[in-house]
Image (tube, rainbow, N blue to C red; front, side, top):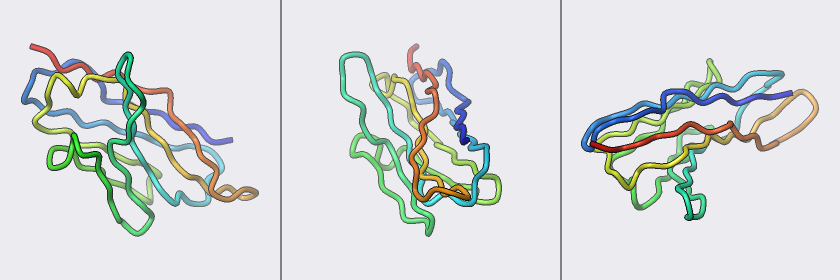
Length: 120
């Protein structure tokens, strides 16, 4: 039984910053990869950022250079640092993790999502 919980979303002005957090809990042996996705109304879900167990990162084109994904292996947490925010960044942001448990390998889990709104 694994649960992912996001926090840190809210309302911010254009040009501002937010830091999202995601914590995994349960019977976890290790996490092989973390990722953040987002979905705006009427648009498909898109990859924002991902990081592997060895620290290799990938970013969506629309956030390259503005967002940074960070992992904390000992705490089973990931962070998404968002800078220079734009109104088009407004969306629900979801945390995803590939989790190794005592009985299963590489099982994917999703958080419930957190709302980010960029507006003046």
